[in-house]
Image 1 (cartoon, rainbow, N blue to C red):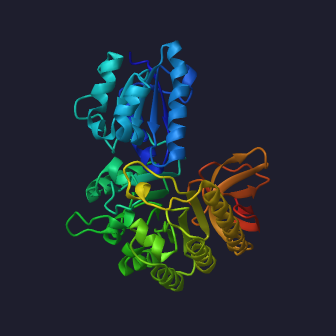
Image 2 (cartoon, rainbow, N blue to C red):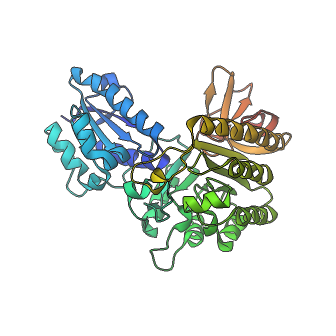
Image 3 (cartoon, rainbow, N blue to C red):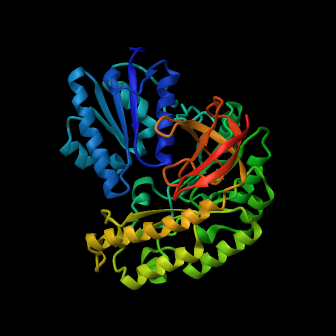
Length: 438
C-alpha cells in the first residue's frame, strides 16, 4: 500500500494552501508518492474553498471532474471550507465521493483516510502537524499562517462560520517553523491570516510588532511580507517596526472593501474613509518606498451610485499600487444576504468594470515610476510566449493581483535566484527590465 500515489488539488486562498501542504506532508512522511497527474493517482484529494459563489462553483466543478477517475479505481476525498460549511448537503447531493472531511475533523484526518484505504498510514496524534508541511510554493518563498479564524464579523463574510473565532498561533511554533523554512533556503516568508494585525490579542505579552521583532532576530538571509492588515489595527509600533527593519518588506496589504462610510458601517467594517487616508499619508511620509494594495467589493446591498462614486474618488486620491475587486455575492447565513436593496447584477458588473478601468490607469502611473530604477528581483520562471524570464521584487506579492516583472537576458538565469534588475518599461500591470549583473 505504501506505493499509493496521491494527487491533491488545492483551491482558494493561501491559508487553504497551507492546509494542503500539511496534508501532503502527512502522506510524504509515510512514504506515499505525491503526483500532480490525476491519471496516475490512486487517491485524489480536493481541498475546497467556500468563500464566494464563484469559488463554490469552481469547487463543485472540480469535484465532479475528479469523480470521472473513479472508473480507474481512484478514491476521491474532499476536504476544506466547502465541506465544513455544507457537509450534509454535499453528502446528500454528491454521495459518490468516497470521503468528506470537515476542517474541524482535521486532527483525525489520518484515521478517516486510512479507513477507506485499508492501510495504517498515520501514527495517532501525528496526522495534521503544521511543522510537517510539504511546501509547494517556489523554492525561494513560503507562507506561514500565524492565526486561525476571525473575530471581525463583517456582514458579508462567512469566514467565521467556516473557520471559527480568531485564535493566535503560539509564538514559539511560528518561530520554529520559520527557522525550518530559512534553513531550507527560503528567503521570502509571507505571514498570513484572516487578520494578521490582530495577532496576539488572545495571548500574553505579544502582538504583531513584537512577533516581527522576534522573527527578524533570526539568523539567515530572508525578508518578511505581511498579507491582510486591518486598517485600524495598524499601530505606530507596527509602522516603525517596518520602517526601521530592512528584513520586513514595506508592503501594506489593506483590504478596505468600500470607501463609502455608510457602506462601511453596513459591512460592519471599523474605521472611515478619512481615517484610512490619514493612515496612508502617515505611512507614505515615514516610508517613502511603501507599497499599498487593497480589495474592494462593488454592489453591496444598498450601495447607491453616490456610494460607488465615493469609492472611485477615494481610490483616485489614495492611489494604491495594486487593487483587486469582487462583485458582491450573498452568502448563506450572513447578515448582508438578508438585507434589503440588493443590487442588480448588471449594475454590479458595470461598477466593477468602471472601478477596474480607473485602477488600471492608477497602476500604470505607479508602474511608470519604477522605470530607470534598479531592484533586487527573484526569478520565478521563463515565459515561452514572451521569450523572457519573469520574477518579483518587494513591491509585487506572490499572487494573481500584482503582476510580474519580465526580464530579458542573454545569459541563462537561475530559477529562485536573486538578480539586480533595471526596470526599462511598464504596462498597466506588469513591468519589464534587464539584468544589470549576473
